[in-house]
Length: 326
Image 1 (spheres, rainbow, N blue to C red):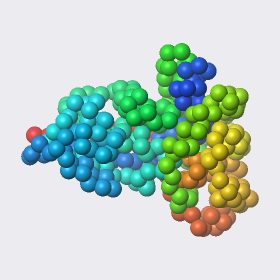
Image 2 (tube, one colour):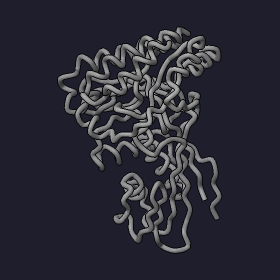
Image 3 (tube, helix red, strand yellow):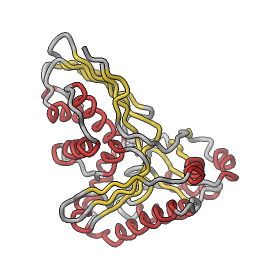
Image 4 (cartoon, rainbow, N blue to C red):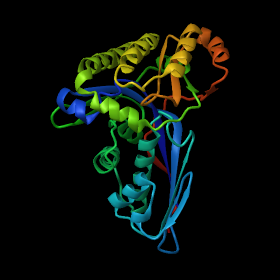
């Protein structure tokens, strides 16, 4: 049996500029971080030739083509495994629609587990590229590429997506201990209780790229500024920049926000949060907020109807945490 631990993420700045339809022409960048919440993938050989896939449902099939879980199915195809395997996925959060990058985390984790079962040493860049190929090229999902890379690499990272050749330049941001503690303490996640299919939001966002180029350019600028501020230790600037970026992001597609989300965000700001955003595509999932320590208890009181998810920024990318093969 092999167990792979792959981190979820919280995207801070620049989301939307990682769509190939944008960055291949204009270049893009994001400031994003893995968090200490994970998807765990277990995989083992079976005594027979069947394939068993366990998630919120269980599938027991005779061939890869019969698998309904498309991310697992295409991971099998990419790694060449076609019989006699059992694979399961378990997560620290709701299975989909959270906004914390769970789909890409599953893909990266599944690929990592399958390569490990094949006794193939795989690097983070290969995992990320393989997950992007499955989700974007094979399955045609209208998504960007930051989630796959941060799940594979881990850490707090500034990523640049180069125009023309699409090269991804990923740089780990090393913060001094005091700055990192402050950032960890002041970023809060609250679950709205609403899971949503991101595809419709992202499809509209993708189709709007041409008309929203100036907005995306401004969002890239904020990502650069936020990275500079953090490296200089100006952590409180992150709250104001999150608010500025959220105002811009809501212009990218009509369903990124809604009246319920807007009301929650206004309530949070009135209670002491200086900025925030809906994680991921929008529409629901987790609400990320930046709040100074002296206002956090009041904020929690005002958002008592929401479940908080305590978290810290994560260091590690996808990794094998157990490997026992005869």
